[in-house]
Image 1 (cartoon, protein in one colour):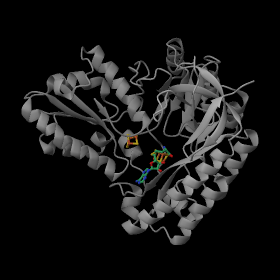
Image 2 (cartoon, rainbow, N blue to C red; image 1 turned 180 degrees about the horizontal axis):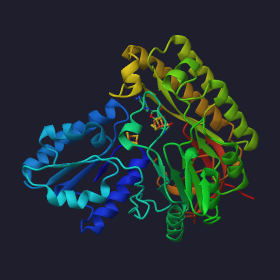
Image 3 (cartoon, rainbow, N blue to C red; image 1 turned 90 degrees about the vertical axis):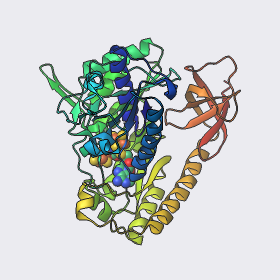
Image 4 (cartoon, rainbow, N blue to C red; image 1 turned 90 degrees about the horizontal axis):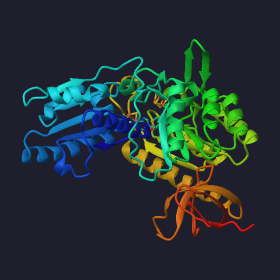
Length: 435
Ligand code: SAH
Ligand code: SF4
Ligand code: F3S
């Protein structure tokens, strides 16, 4: 089993693993031993798909060596390319994101001449009753999908096509999973959805919106931190911001993808907000929760982007002072509104130059943001051993910054009170706080 793409896909792989285990399969780390190889794939940018085509080539070699093994492509690329994946004659199984319950049955039905394909999208599948087999090795942080699909129509984005319509999951099943995690020693739970702010569950007992769900999740245990991702700037409500502020164990961090700082681009991207709206939301968040971390996603070189549009993005980044960002070059996705309506006309070298400028600016902003934390104290959840120095731990602040420090007597999963001594653009170098 291999996983590509976003955290939601990682979580889906954990659901798949449960379904496969229940059908008698066991996970192996050794691809040479596997009788079934599943790749859970991503279509978000062309380079994501190119990588997977490369993997399929390698699977072909395994198959040549060991007749009878099953090669399955599941997830977003399966949904987007459908039977075109079978043309390679390497793939035996193509399954979209809403068909995982059928995987064992489909695998049984495969014969050399009969590959199996199911890419039907569902209006109500949320895998609510399936307990994911946790693959995160630290045993401290875990993810819970609270919804699937997306009802927005951002013009550049393939997700509504690969994941289908938005649907929320029963809050009781979410809470059950959260309690299970807490009982098993997990200390951090991230609630996942493409647009968590539009979470909405209705039944005979009434209605639960995202603010309500957050409140319920915060109640699971005072020792369990709650995070969430992704928020949409057009939908993040004062109620959500208020609920965060009211609970110490809801982390002070919001991932709020802006995509562009230019109103002309935002309009064309169909993001349904303006830069002024975005800046107002940031101001609101900071007025209610000073010190709240804000991170973002940015796309460089969208259709028709002028030098001025690009300057507007740099200017907005500077105004907000993001703590961190994921930054991408625009990649046209076939079939999307943008691909149908706007030429992908920013030359590749210009896209690269703009992206590099955005990355350089973000490095400076991250460093400036971290410098402001030097001398401050934070409560950090230890979630691993530092990669640089095996004697040190790493962990995150509530605002989602990485701290590295030595803490004799502590262990992974403990909270530690640290003081920041110095920093880089990526890390707060810290020590245990002395009282
Ligand atoms: N649901 C989230 C993001 C999902 S995809 C949201 O609405 O923000 C993650 C990120 O990939 C997006 O925020 C965007 O920055 C980037 N992305 C999506 N489609 C892209 C494309 N066609 N080219 C480049 N980047 C893209
Ligand atoms: Fe894509 Fe927009 Fe939905 Fe995010 S909100 S997944 S960018 S369509
Ligand atoms: Fe995620 Fe990639 Fe699909 S980002 S939703 S796996 S297209």
